[in-house]
Length: 80
Image (cartoon, rainbow, N blue to C red; front, side):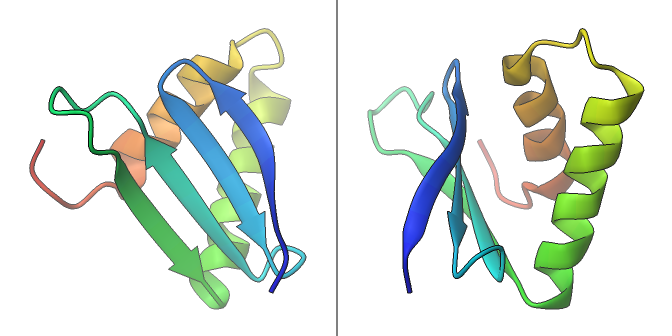
């Protein structure tokens, strides 16, 4: 499955795999240097992309870093 970075801003990087079948949102801001990541696929990937598109459409002047930060806060389930 081919992967492509579709957005990178601040500590965040968004990677799309399989033409949008899966997304990985990476947070490179971990103090010990190891990145955290959230992986979504199938129906969750469709929902993730829709939420991302809605956020960008509703707030076109919002910096990409803030958009990805919002998505991170929405989908991250671990402990930082």
